[in-house]
Image (cartoon, rainbow, N blue to C red; front, side, top):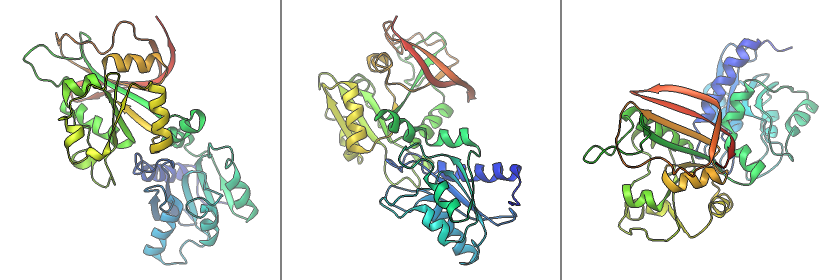
Length: 351
């Protein structure tokens, strides 16, 4: 019988989730996964690990190796491992993690989320229990499912999961009056956008936004640290009339910029998923593109930054013909002077 209490299990799984979040935006087409190895009696964490990139060792292997480095090769005998996602049970670009768990002598396996891929679902439990290893799943399951939501979405739809963000004033404007700052949101909100960018594989804008703002769409400062490469920067345009001097086409990350001209948004998303391993996209474009994405049902999550300003600008976030979108799972957070409202798109209908 396990000597790790239910309360300890949650604490340890949250530590594994913290590891898993480090891989967000870097592991596609694989899911981000975190793992920790714990002493048999639950007295201490022996090792930590997370999946860094596709083709590199999985979280379980990283955590076991970390434990061995710190405490010796025998420390995992009879130990427990907490992993945010069901360990892989088949051979892919790396050997199955179930083999590594058995080889390390681990006696207890605690899992957050079951693998959403039908061909692998439940395979780890069957293999490990047959080897005499205790297996418990569903610990902090909502949080574990949230961590892999991009991966799960692609399995179910074949498309990347799309997050759309925009900033508005109290009077519903996306720009300030003439002669005023281009920034609506606070510095704290812009820092928050950097956090969201880091979690995504790609950032998408329309030609309208490129011409008006000439954005960089890069990770900067602490958010670029430890990141193997910048997110893909994607520009979609109906006309192809895009200024070639734009920063996206001329800066040091120009090789991370993709452009799509005259293609439907569905075709763009399909190509990004199929040929560029994109599983998560952040739309940072307002106007017609955001309205079209909502109307076509391609927006899965919405993030609104509401600034305490009466802007008076001429631009609104979306045309009046945009689809009606209802959000669920609302989260309202104060960030600096702004209010961030986010949620999952539940229902979309035409006006």
